[in-house]
Each structure stands twice: as structure tokens, then as C-alpha cells.
Length: 448
Image 1 (cartoon, rainbow, N blue to C red):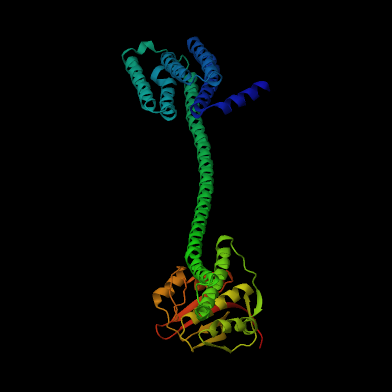
Image 2 (cartoon, one colour):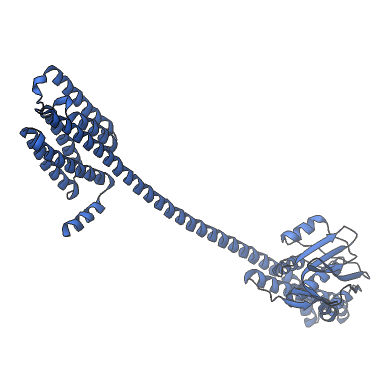
């Protein structure tokens, strides 16, 4: 039991070439033992002795190959033993008409299969040259060959030898086939492992790429935010601060201050509106703001909560804001704060680019799965280039009809926030003919 366990352990430790050589030597040992038994009854004493010596040599080669791992020594010794055995067997076993000729052929085939590199060609050629040399030698010296005394033994020896040669070739091919299958499975396993690792690397690369894009977007958002704070938010505050300092020091007449109060009010209103937008926009950009989407009556919300503030915004330019709701109870799915910010910014933008004493009409209707909240003004209109910039999220500065400041963050913010609620922003405009901004809100259900 211990010997068998040790044998299995040693076999597992073998490299491919060592394994093949060990199997070939095992086959040779079994075949030589069978030939030894046969020759003991059918052949001469010299042939039997020769087979016995060869068996001892094979056992020695088997030991140094399996336990010492001396592959090259075992291989060279195995080839030399075979050559010497078959050479002597040629003369002791009926020459070319005996079994040695078949073993020469089988050995040539086996060596051409199991050997590597140049040896695969050189050694089989050497064996064939030896075979031809023995044929020539027998041709000129036929008396050197010992013939079988009994023809029956000769026939049985040929049948036995041919059978052993067939078994030898089959065994070699079968060993190589098994090793090929084992190598193929190992290659498939290695290929699958590499494929899995490649998938993991691709997933990691994709994750890193996504994280890099997010970082770039956050960096761009940070730069845009600082740019807005440093210029568009600071400028009106600095101007107001200057006027207050002059008034505080008494260097500015009270009457002049009263004249500038409307301008200061407009500047502060713009600043507060911009600050609200900046705070909400920075929150959505830097902290991944998640909206609280719920069922909301759009008509009631706009009429009851938003309209009064919108009318106050339009008062300075004496712009009239009217409602034309074709649906009086329309339920949409949207965040309340987002709807308020979008309505305020869209209406503020309409007021900014509308002339004094004009009108802004707010219409609510439905189309397919959306409620359309339309803001229609009679202003200067927008050129396609500016509309394209808004869709792409590009900030730009344009003054209103009364030189109101602006950087375009309002409609950009509206578009981003509506997308978070599965809605969208659509702009229809023509220069000199006003603008229609459509806020598309996903429908919940309609109350008739």
C-alpha cells in the first residue's frame, strides 16, 4: 500500500516528458518480461539471457527516471539498451525473418513520436541506418544468424512479436493521446482563468474610467461654481456695498440714494435669485441631489403658490402674467422644490428678455404621457446657437432688455433638474418673435 501511494505521488510530480518516458519504459518492461517467458520455451539460451539482462537494465532506468528524475540519462540509456538488444536479437532470433525487424520498425515509429526537436529526426534515422546495416551484414554473412530449429516456434514467435509490436504502437499513441487531452484541458482552464481575469480587469478599467469621468465632471462643476461666485455674485454685492458706504459716510445726497434704490433693489433681487440657483445647482452637482418625486397637482401649485411670486418679479417691468390652463386638475410626478425652481427660472428668463408692458402667458396642457407647462413671452427671442448651448449645458452671459445681468445658469439648471425627474425642457424661439419654453412633466393621472 505504501509503495503504491509513493508511486502515485511520484507520478504526479513528473513533467510531461518524464511522464511519457516512464510510461514507455513501463511498457518495455512488460513486453520484455513476456518475451523472456516466450524465449525460455521457444528460443535459444543466449536469447533468453539477453532478454533477462535487458530487463535488469530497464528496471534500473525506470528507477533513475522515476525517483532521481535523471531524464536525459534514462533516455540515452533506454535508447542504447534497445539498440544493443535488437542488434543481438537480430543474430540470435532468425535475422531479418525473425522478430527483431518488427521491433526496429516499432522503435523507429515510437522515437519519432516521443522525442523532441532534432532528436525526433536524428535518432529514428540512426535506427533505420542500423537496421539497413544489419540487413546488409546478414546478406553477406548469412551464417552469423542463428535460425530457429523448430518452424512451429518460429511461427508462434512471429505471431507473438507482431502482437507485441501492435500493442507497443497502440500504447505509445494512447499515452500521447491522453497527455494531449490533459494538456488541452489545462490550456482551456488557463484560457478560462485568463478570460476571467481579463473580465475583472476590464470591469476595473471601466470602473476607473467612470470614476475618472465623475471626478472630471465634479472638477468642471467646481470651476464653474467658483467662476460664478467670483464674478456674477460678487459684482452686484460689491456695487451695493459701495453705495451703502457712501451713504453711511454722508458723501452721497439722500435724494440721489432714493433715485438709485430701484436699481439696488433690482441688483439685490438678481443676486438673491442667482444665489438660490447656485446653492441648488452646486448641491445637485457636488452631492448627487436625489429628488423627492411625488404626485403633485401642477395647475393648483402654479396658480396658488408660484403665481404671486412670479407677478412680483414682473412688476418692475410692468409685465402681465396670465394663466391659460386647459386642465384644471392635472397630476404630475415631480419634486415640489424642482418645480418651483424651474418655474421661477423660466419665468425670470422670460421677464428678462421681454420689453416693458408686455405679456407672458403660462399654458398647461397634456401630450401623451406628459403635462406641458408652457411659458410664452413676447420678447426678443433666442438664436439657435444660444439654444444649442443651453441644451449642452454651456454657460454664457447675455443682458436682458433692461440690461439685466445673467449667465445662463437658470435654464441650464432647469434642464438638469427636470432630467432627474424624468422630465425635459424644450425651447422654441425665433429672433424678434418671442420664445416658448416647454416644461415636460411626467403624468400621474388626470382628474376629469
